[in-house]
Amino acid sequence: MRRVTTPDGTDAVVGHAPGPEGAPTVLLYCHYDVQPPLDDAAWRTPPFELTERDGRWYGRGAADCKGNIAMHLTALRALGGPEGRGFPVSLKFVAEGSEEQGTGGLEQLVPLQPELFAADTLLVCDTGNFALGLPTATTSLRGLTNVVVTVSTLKGEMHSGMFGGPAPDALAALVRILDSLRDEHGNTVVKGLPGDGSWEGGLSGRAVPHGRGRPRRVSLVGTGSVADELWARPAVTVLGIDCPPVVGSSAAIQARVRARVSLRVPPGIDADDALRALTDHLASAAPWGARVEVEPESAASPSGPAPTALPTGHWGRRSARRTARTWSSRGRAVRSRCATCSPHTSRRRRSP
Image 1 (cartoon, rainbow, N blue to C red):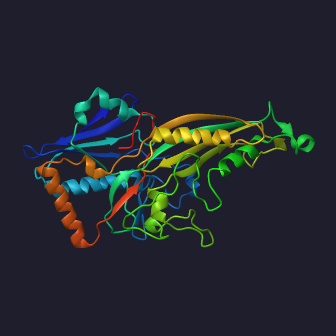
Image 2 (image 1 turned 30 degrees about the vertical axis):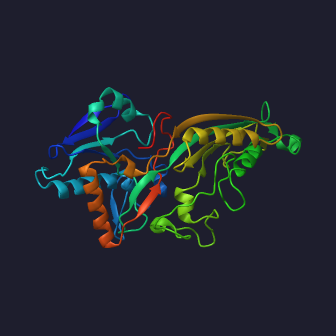
Image 3 (image 1 turned 45 degrees about the vertical axis):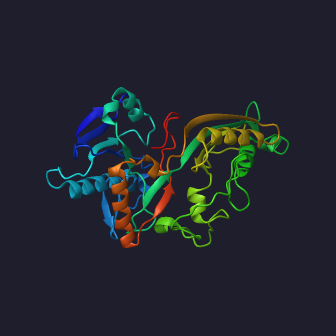
């Protein structure tokens, strides 16, 4: 194991362990950087102090992705033995430090030192399971496309007491545009993208993975099953809005506002096609002749299904059969298509 400095200044931790002669090489991927904690006062425990509460561990990045790093190390110790010589395949390992900030350090390093990453199969352990104690094999990752949409209606702000009513409000126009991305049931409805996909797997109905809580009176959105909405259909999210905050706001009609919009893309839809559809939808939904500018930030196409990436020879078949037998005997074999990708991922980067 060693550290390698990437072109954006962050360090990647890389490693290699040889396996039996002729065995395929598996690359294990994770990241150690985390999202900023934002409001420290909103945390029940210090964000960067790992704290146990009610049998669970809490801390910034405990699940994304530091817990996954601990899982890597625990599994490697179990498989390789104390000397690390019992691995059935050759292993390569990389933990990057630029995934969350999206500065592309690792992606720039790959063409510079491709030998560090050459492998037959890539295992991304930056996903999760949708029930405690239930092993979950993530066979596909949703892609994404992010844009910043800017809406302009006036040359400058105007006093709402004098001009409120006829003067077009950029913030109100933006609200109308964003509202057009979902129908009355909460389904994502981007013109040109199919929104009726179905998912065949181990989760059905309206149960929420991971037991995530919500206020009792707030309903889930969408007309499909939770699995359909999570893994088979496009899903739009408004990540942020630039407009005056409540504290300090004045009696002014806004002239220019903007929002960051993220669209998760299920397998079967190309991210570039989704980007064009989202851009066209936002522009066509502008009311009152408002000027709309859409700036693309990123596009990452869906990946999978995972079995297509496995070696087709003896090692791949044997590993697949062994995994299937083990999980089926426990009654916990699950396939899921879930999404993990930074909202600021570089446009050139594809979901692993």
